[in-house]
Length: 116
Length: 114
Image (cartoon, rainbow over the protein chains, first blue to last red):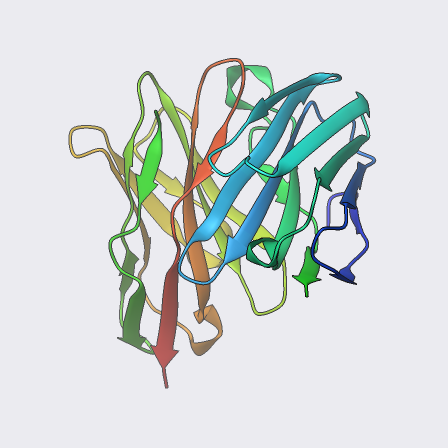
C-alpha cells in the first residue's frame, strides 16, 4: 500500500480519554491527510498537511488536532474522545508533483476506533 | 469552497452491460479529478485521474472517465461490467493550488448482478 502504515489498526477507548493515531510513510510525499469514513457520509477530511509543521483544517476538524514534526509522520489526536468519534480513520499521502504528476493519493489500511 | 457530488448512492447493473457512475464537482480554478474504488474492509485504491489534456481518461481494470468542463462532471464508465467490479466508488477533487486539499464525494455502491 505505497509505503503507508497506520497504527494502531484497531482501538477501543473510553469516553473522555485522549487518543493518538499515527500515520507513517516511507515515500517522502509532501501531502498527508486524515479522513474519517462513516456510513452515508463517504470520506470526510479532518486535517491535512502540506509540509512539515504546515497543517490546515478540513470539514470535520472539531475535537481533533494534528502534528507533523517530520515528513514521514502525521499524528491525529482526539483530545477527549466522544462516542461520535467512533469511526474508521484513513490516512492518505500524495506527492502533489508539479505539472500534475504524482498527484494521486495513496491510502493506508485504516484504523477502526470505537469509543465506549 | 470545493465540493464533489455523487448523486446516486446505489447503482445496479447486469454483468456484461455498460456501467456509469456519476460525479459532479464545484471548484474554482482548474480541478484535478480522481476516481477511487474501495473493497470491503480495505483502504481506497486509485483508479484514474484527470489533470489536463484529453477529456477521456483511461485507468485501471478497464475503467474510463470523461471530463466535461461545461457540465462540471467527471463520470466513471466501463463498457462491460463484471461481477468483480462490485464495490464502493468515490470521486474526488483537488484544486490546483498550493494546499492540495483533497475532497471526496459520498460514494456510490456499485452492484453488478450475474
